[in-house]
Amino acid sequence: MDVEELFAQISVFCEKTHGSSDYDRDDFFVKGKEPEEFAPLRYLIKKVDGLEGALQLTSNGFIYEACDFITSEVFPSWFEKQFSRKLTQKFVKKITLLQKPDDQLILNSIEQVNKFYETLRTHKILLNGKNLPVQLGEWYVRSIFGLKQKKSTSQRGFDFISNDVRIEVKVSWNDNSSPKGIKIKKTLVDLSDHCIIIYLAKNFMIREICFLDSEFILRKFAGKGHTVFLKDNEVSSYFFSKSTRHLDKVVNSVALLKYASPTLAMKIAEHF
Image 1: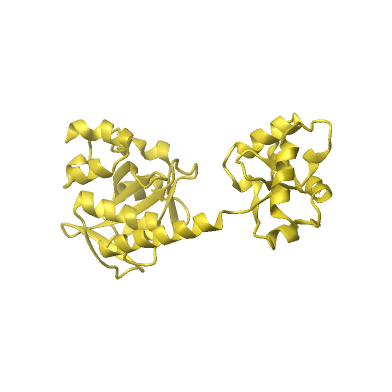
Image 2: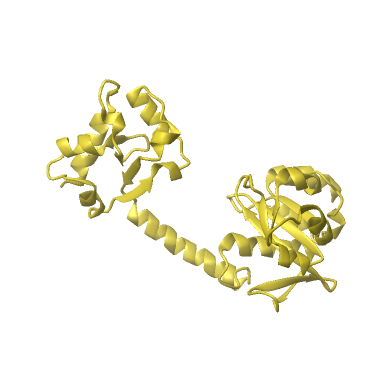
């Protein structure tokens, strides 16, 4: 099978619409070289010499991607344009995309990531096996609030201390919070005096900070089970962007403003 011939046939398929065909019912679609080029696998089997099925594509470097796990609107838009019908949520769960990654670009990126990680390790931002967003968020909190860090006696990891008071730090990494809320173990809240929730955007900048008293959390949110869920609408009045209640806890405002997202920085800059 010639991969270049495959890509050429994908381009040919995209040159016209196929609303009168039944290709919209296919479960497998193959991505072409261009961002908005796809073609049904069934069509490609007919057009590309030697192509017999999806397994053959994976042996040539293509990988499976579940369509409903991809947040991009490119494929749904392409699908609607090609077949003159909406890609329903029920049907999207059935679709698998096959695409060939740029291996050299990925390899180069991995090499760069390794260099960046080494820099973060050298500056003692990465200290253990936790993922990058969690450790970066914890480092932000240590910098902004002047917290001490020591090996935990109650869990794997570290405790954060301020004036002999234990602080529980929770990092949320996403552009939007989960509708279920930020999950914190009740035992960790009970062992601390305060909880700091730091919300990182996907670009790793701070999009929000919430400083809460542990007694308040246990009194207001403690229900059944061992986990506390803090939803944005229930704690947003304590967000730094909306309240000055705990801004006095900040010891390094330069770090806060430097690592904050532009939106957050604009909202809190006047207080420093």
